[in-house]
Amino acid sequence: MMTEEVRIVAGIDEKYVNDALRLAYDAFAKKFRIGFRDADDLVRLFHDSVDPTSCISAVVTGQFAGILTYQTASQEFYHLNPAAIFTRFLPWRAMRMLLNLMLLADEPKPDDFVVDSLAVAESCRGMGVGTALLQQAEERARAMGKRTMSLGVIAENDGAIRLYERQGYDTTRKWHGFFVRLAFGSAEVLRMEKPLVADPQSHG
Image 1 (cartoon, rainbow, N blue to C red):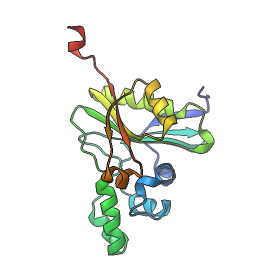
Image 2: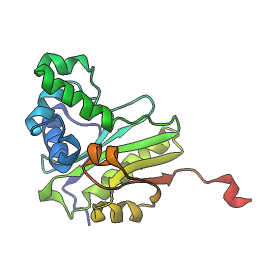
Image 3: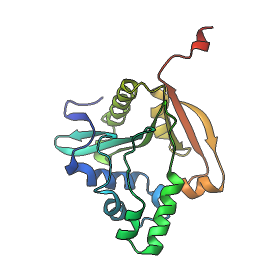
Image 4: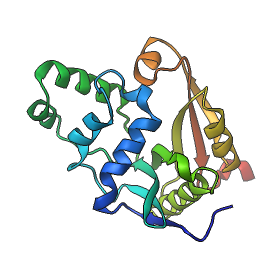
């Protein structure tokens, strides 16, 4: 049950951006393992180039507690000019980072709201933060007129899959193979979706 101390807000305060990047790295280190050595690399690359409006964040008694980042056809949290990689890192490391980011890139459909990442600080787990972030994101997606919400999750992440299923997401596709292992560090990735509007055919 979420306590009264938890605040869920649209966007993220600038003072919490680095905390959010470090939390994202810790939660998804397998996804960043090709080009990034540690959380400091992610902060160095993105600290001044994220889109602070393309996320939902959580704060507990003044401390950063969690973040949900998302993509639409016109918005993206990790907004970066690739040329910036080469101005901040040596060429051989920049190339690896660019490859890493290209493997993770997605191209949302116009009607889709993609949950890019959901991460909750370890000290705040069990407080309903993840559920609240998802629910707030759904409100935003509906306000944007999106028809579906979607996300990817590795098959080993049982806890996250249960959370998404409780919120009405169903597995619509499974990915396997070399590039899945390379990009996600997992043998299988699930695509899960939640419709935001009723399917007219379901009433026919």
